[in-house]
Amino acid sequence: MNEEIYVLFAPDLHGCFADGETLEEAEKNTDIIIEEWIELAKELGRDIPEPSEYKGERITLKQEECFL
Image (cartoon, rainbow, N blue to C red; front, side, top):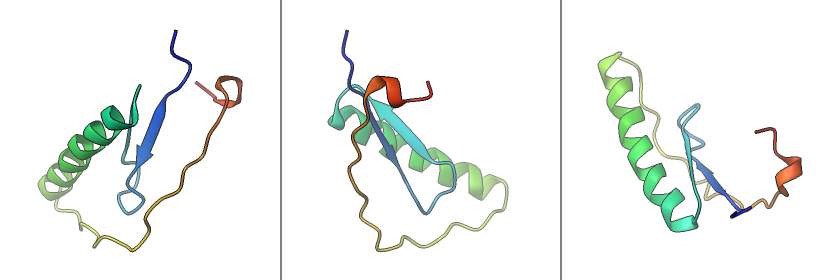
């Protein structure tokens, strides 16, 4: 059982995040969810924020530290 999981989020898009068992999978899933987030925001007539300069940070948690 793989005990690692990668979770990435788009800080400018409230509630927009994705995960994956590898960093590459998490990045791919994040690209997909960002597109879906923007598409839904447009459908709902909501503003889409401009990207910020925030580049992210890496945080490592042990499985028992997660609330899953």
